Image (cartoon, rainbow, N blue to C red; front, top):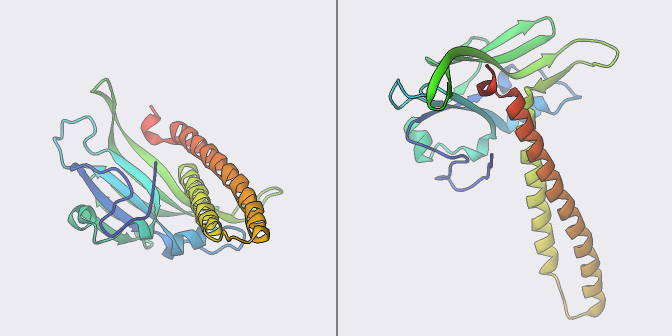
Length: 237
């Protein structure tokens, strides 16, 4: 997984000619909680991106397969030809959102509060290019955790896969920010030895922080891969 913001013609993930793209904003129905950053992220920064393999033979092993990501909205330009040609934007309200024959998004009320579930229908499970099962799956996108207990205060939380995506994207943004600052400091070198010495001290500090940020990014990526292997619905039999 590698998401990077680019020009209006950029697309943040790999593309094929077999896919359709549904971009879903869920922030309107998420309650605010001061102890969670999730409501603000979903109201102002992130949208769910659903990718369905649909433009191919119905006999294909991955026909109808749905892939799901949580992506910054400014990574998805409507001017991108893939989105303008095969993409759609949606706002989830209180009613279910039927996107295609393989995908439906439902907000549900539970004892703990609202939760949003992606219902993935008729998903083919294959091995060695042969389909051995077809199943429906329920994928948690986000939920309100309104259970009041000794160690658990009310909050809003993402499904594990999507929290891992947020963590790795933020770690990468930290690396980008440090690189920008470090390059700016390096351009301030002057003939004055005292100024140069001070700049070198700052550079050393920033370089250490950057090294740690790279290590944290690697840790977050390993965690993301572990979560997707463990939680990814396509791995469940």
